[in-house]
Length: 158
Image (cartoon, rainbow, N blue to C red; front, side, top):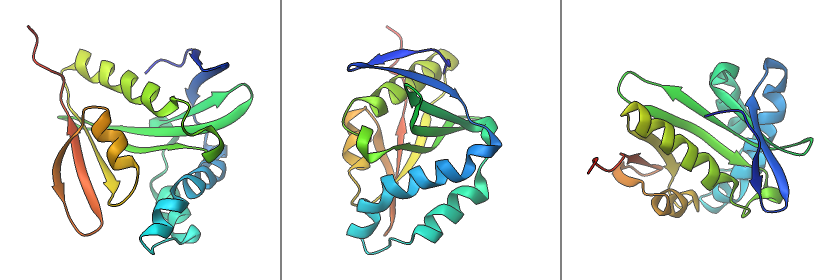
């Protein structure tokens, strides 16, 4: 995905690579964005949510979403041999519902289609993320007690 400005509602949205120094701020965004879903399933632990993110944090795979000078969210895409793995996509609660997530996913889908790769991801059961990803064309692959795995494949060329 390019790191160029896009227009979202009335504000300018920009994507840029994350830096090592931003790890804690990104973990804070993850905790804030996940809190309602984790509380709903009785699993909210800010320490655990931060630790799980920080343990796997790699700025090379992480893109920050900015609106103006404000960090509005981020996403992490891990390149695998046979697919792109959307490991994280979080938007600050104050910026949710403005279309940022859809812009990110549409951009990833365009990149995946150009590369001939599917996108895979995992969402917490009971989270609104499930309906979001299904609305973006992802289909259920498998599910367990905690999470659901989804995949998206570009439609065949006509």
